Image (cartoon, rainbow, N blue to C red):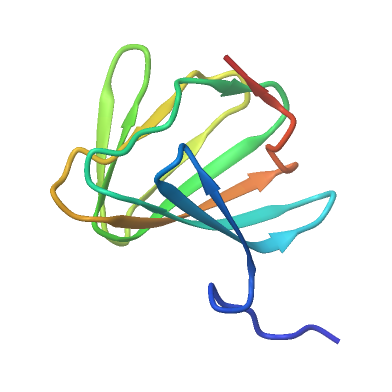
Length: 113
């Protein structure tokens, strides 16, 4: 039977030394992670060979940087990232941002720089 999950009960990890991630769903077919990125935080530019991702902002603002453009996502907005598409998530605001990263298949081990 499925159980309710939250950041209080999910497996937690730290990435980039300052960002938090919580595995809300972690299976061979699907990954759903809630992440917190502080002001000024960013991930390394990368792409995924197999994973299709959807970033959905819960609170704050997240900027997705692509080769030719950047997209600012405010709360309750999202963007799909196709496999092979180089991208970089950045928090250019002055406050924390929280967002979901949904990956199918899971992106861990699929990251290319």
